[in-house]
Amino acid sequence: MVKIPETFILGAASSAWQTEGWQGKKEGQDSYLERWYKEERFVWHNGYGPAVATNFMEKFSEDVELMQEVHLTHYRTSINWARFFTDHEQLIVDEDYAAHIDQLIDQLLAAGVEPMLCLEHYELPASLMDAYDGWSSRKVVDLYTRYAEIAFERYGDRVKQWFTFNEPIVIQTRCYLDAIRWPHEQNTKKWMLWNYHKVLASAQAVAVYHEKGYEGRIGCVLNPEMVYARSSSPEDQKAQKMYDLFFNRIFFDPMVKGHYPEELITLCQTYDIYFDPTEEDLETIRTHTVDFLGVNQYYPKRVRAPRYQWHSDTPFHPEMFYETFDLPGKQMNNSRGWEIYPKVMYDMANYLKENYGNIPWLITENGMGRENEEQYMDATGQVQDDYRIQFITEHLYWLLKAVEEGANCEGYMLWAFTDCVSPMNAFKNRYGLVRIELNEERTRSLKKSAAWYRSLIDERWLPFEEKPLIL
Ligand code: BG6
Image (cartoon, rainbow, N blue to C red):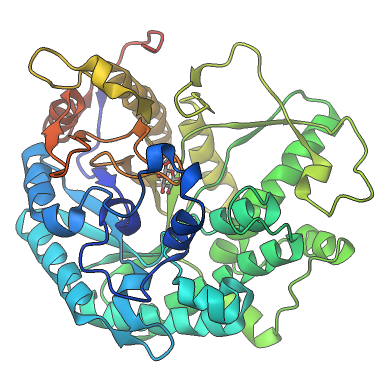
């Protein structure tokens, strides 16, 4: 048994677009995700997607009741930027949607659940992609900042923990660096520009939040990957350092330390992907660093030195400096294709302690998506998700060990409270403590893990014995 400190948060998370559904959605309120779904529906598992999602717009009160039943104390979701306005440039608030957020916040608070809100979980308005090519434009940085200001004005009295973005690196990495998602435009310079503009947008939102003197704090949810080198050879070590630089420090450094790593700037200049910031904008980034961090952590990243020379016709990609290493014998979540390595929690905690001044942070996402969960239903129809209980247990064990050794981690938020829509995988892999049936009603039922999670929250002891994962 491992003691869970009294103040350690045990919460759960989700996002607007992955739960809401299009009930009440108006013309022109598509987000990037919805545009992608409409353009390439065939890549979404069995055609499911954001259209109905979990029908949270209509069923959120039921979910709040279930949170109460699980004794949940914290819930993170996002405001859907695309739905928050009827005009994203004139910033005309959609009062119907804004009222929904009001009700959600009030019901959560009444149920004893603290809401944590994120301003963007991939919900960039598609209209801003059409007009400005999204984050390619400095103008979108300012429109986002105004949006943040309005959101704080409306909800800042009740919401005390804010996040500027969820995983700000993801969209442009899939779309413009790896070009595996619509609109399939390979453009490494654009990738870097989007990265930079999101750092700047985050700093501007932090500035507004601080200047207006709200009682609360603001940070960003990042998805750093704990990178492990294949070996101790200098070549593999260099591959590890380069991966860390291009995918982790690229957000950590400016957001926490207020400046980009020199090496990154030099590499961007060398490979013609520099983003040419103004002095004034760099000053904003320098001055307005985050109060705390959210860290989404699911799997480790393993690399080795590249074995082949970069093809001269292939545009620059950080992969020039590393190759993914496939560790023989690794444990896998085969439904998701992600390695399971619970010690990643401990190593990430130490990484933050050593490199970022032990800034306050929390795990904002970790969890296990499992395909065909109906096969684990008992005679009463309840999903017996022992694999999830074991996954959470092992990850929490390593996290709590780090906390005991001085890591500044304040909590663990499970992904997700209910099953929800994944980008592309839709409802293939289920993540929730609460099962969602894909019938018209989107019926909810508690899985075995829900009662188990409640016992952690109540008793504050983690039952832990080392045994292989049940797969
Ligand atoms: C996180 C995202 O990276 O991973 C979530 O913030 C996402 O939006 C979660 O759903 C799980 O990944 P996936 O692709 O299986 O849904």
